[in-house]
Length: 391
Image (cartoon, rainbow, N blue to C red; front, side):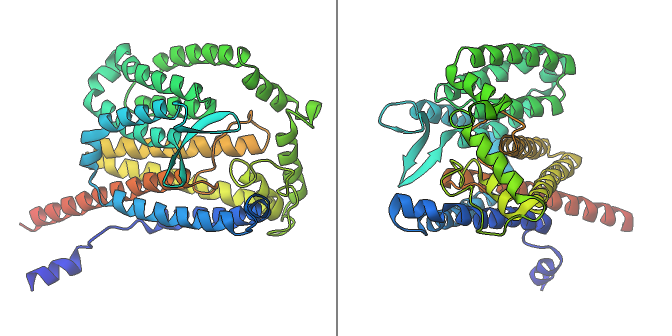
């Protein structure tokens, strides 16, 4: 009887329905647009129009299983093994550069082929980085707050990861990685003047990296004036802008877009947002931006809840995930709209790709776990306070 009463009063798992709704909405909408943008490509590449939709559906199922496993793992486990996970991420970044192991696409070696599925190692590294830097801030908060070396020490490791990413080359992921690290360190108490110095140094290094690489320089110049070379370096951005223009307010209709039909390269991956803009118009674009805004806001709310009950590691992980989702989605949408130079970053939860959707769903599963542990502790504290008041 006592057990039955406990089961009725205390839920087995505190499900964040709001977060679940947002996540499923992004995945569902992304899948629909991905199907629309890849049917013709499947016919061309494999002779089967459903090739990419079926593969992505399998990816989503695997991502759901991975998320279920992650949500069952206590945050204490991630805190304990965060450093090992980060080292494993570095190992994968090295592995992808080994000839014969890394899969080269469009001149970049960013993927490992595992059981017929390409895994982008930079996505796994971002996941590991959020966990590692959150654990570092919790363990060394006093040093982070008072000493410049406390900020510099983990950033040296992140710099190593960025060098490996630049060798792929993957400049966009290197920027995301540094942004995650610096944001969590700042939220952990690092001084603002330290970041001013670091950002200045990073800006100078970025400038040198751009001007010493014809590949990166071409991307910058084509971004500034894509119409100057609309048939070559500016082709992708010009086609994306045409897609946005054709969409107007309400779009041309789902499945009726034409830019995806061999005009817009990578329409089902990096430039999925442009296809959405053409077919669903401004209404679709604003809806997606709203969904991402709610996701990011929810991540920070969950982080605040965790911090209020002294779950500091969990809180910083939630903040780090929020920064990751915010920055990567902002870059992808900014690139599609011509606001930022072209970068090979997927749109979280929406773009085609097995590795991306699996890692993103695993990341959001961490938010569900953090919410569960925070709510469990909040409920426990409330019961203790009620018992103390009644007694």
